[in-house]
Length: 226
Image (cartoon, rainbow, N blue to C red; front, side, top):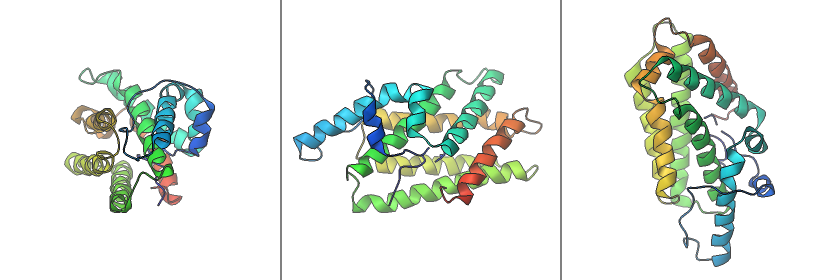
């Protein structure tokens, strides 16, 4: 079962990872060494891991890996986060860029795990659960936007925490602690009470930007990517 799209598809879709090999770079977080029993494969995985950093650090590099629909979704997620931190001193202004990069890196790393046949039969139920939890969270965002006064912070937070838990259950045995920390950073930000209030609170100035994100989510849902 393919899982080269989202951690929010959305949240990003990784295209054929062979494209990554066209660039050279250094990066962090990756695969624990020696798990495959093949020195050649281990070296190959390390090489692909090292390429991710610089490629993902630039918009041009990300465009090699992400389709137009996902790019739009990520751009609007970033804009929403950026506007939220500007209006809330309790939010770190560096977090939106970190969220964007970490979503892309995690999605590509999971895609590489699959491409290199590192995911086993025991991982299949986890992949199904990830898709289900992400879809539920996405549908909640759409509902809260489209139905006035329907925002339920506790429900959305629980939905996002479910996403965090199932993603961590998949990557915990395949990726390093640094990659697990990347996952926590993403969900620590999107579940932050001040971020959620800034986005979904009554008379929020961010509603137009949220509308753009919801439009992207609806397209992803309709296309079956979520």
